[in-house]
Length: 121
Ligand SMILES: [Zn+2]
Image 1 (tube, rainbow, N blue to C red):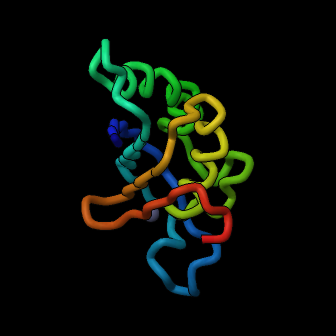
Image 2 (spheres, protein in one colour; image 1 turned 90 degrees about the vertical axis):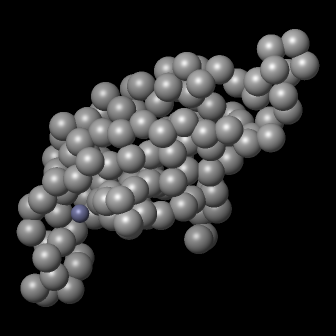
């Protein structure tokens, strides 16, 4: 079964490689939302895949690195698109949360990306 927890953070960014004149070249902020999906067997005793609190705890150090930051200043996020951010989060979260199977990163209510850990896609 697959469960998920959504966690949000606030951050500023700009996209230096967007085409000339693109609005995302300018400094702006988002309330980013990260949906963290974990797949596993339902424990017959506890009745859950994993404690939602454990997902939150695994993400905490990453949240601390991102929240209220200017993402472009963080190593590896010099071009902080949702896609780059999803991959960056995955690399840090997967070792702490082995059941991680999917990340959904939303920068607005209607725009975001889905990443399932495949480096090439
Ligand atoms: Zn943006």
